[in-house]
Image (tube, rainbow, N blue to C red; front, side):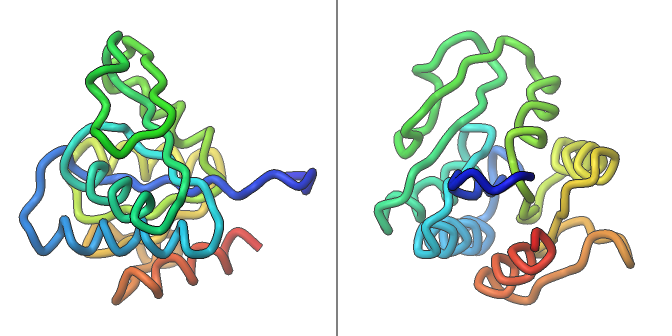
Length: 155
């Protein structure tokens, strides 16, 4: 991507519901993204997406939610910019293309589909307790390491 002074947009992907420990990991990922001055992009709903947005907002960051439905009001309370797509899972393509790189936090099949799309279009992905693929999707051991590894991969 040509540097025109645009802030980096980092996608955080993961399930719409998650256990408390995963929620806290995602929240810390969001905090770290905002701490470094980047914009957080996600699917805009609950679980990992909500936690990451909440963390980013705690640090004064900007959050964007690419929603699967037609109603912006379905976004979690920590989304600054809600984009209603009415596209269901197809919105995953928009999340990937709008992100300069992605961090997968835990997650299920939807997360795996976003990882696959990212790899297909050449976007870097770092996993945190999520799907990893040797040589393609490295596994981070902490939220801070995940953000650092992703920024290094983005160049």
